[in-house]
Length: 144
Image 1: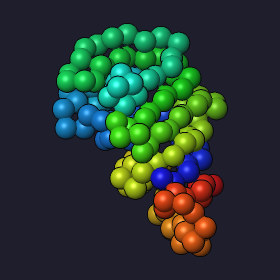
Image 2: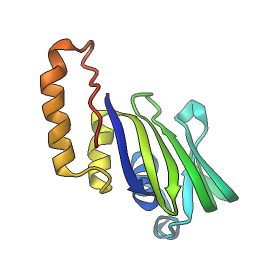
Image 3: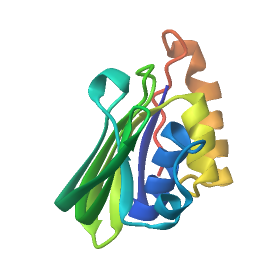
């Protein structure tokens, strides 16, 4: 797992959460609406949106869809527990993303535009240099 600490927009993190949880079955109108978020119970891997206003829209499989306003934070944990990320609002739709991500989630963070190829290269360099001193392949690198 790689430590993540970076700034990103709420929409980019929403896209990441969707790609990691429900991309294959989210209705097109929900996907295209930036105010619609997936949520999931902790036993399935937590997805929770902290917002001033939240309206339940419906459920498909193990994912509930909610329409939100004024998002303060988003918690995401993968079902496997290998990824745990928290987005916290800084100003408007910009927030700080912190936590740990699995290699698969790193790829999805890159595809969502949250991480850049340069940041991935930095992480790989840090991983290489610190790999000798880490236990079980855990990386303590952070993304600027």
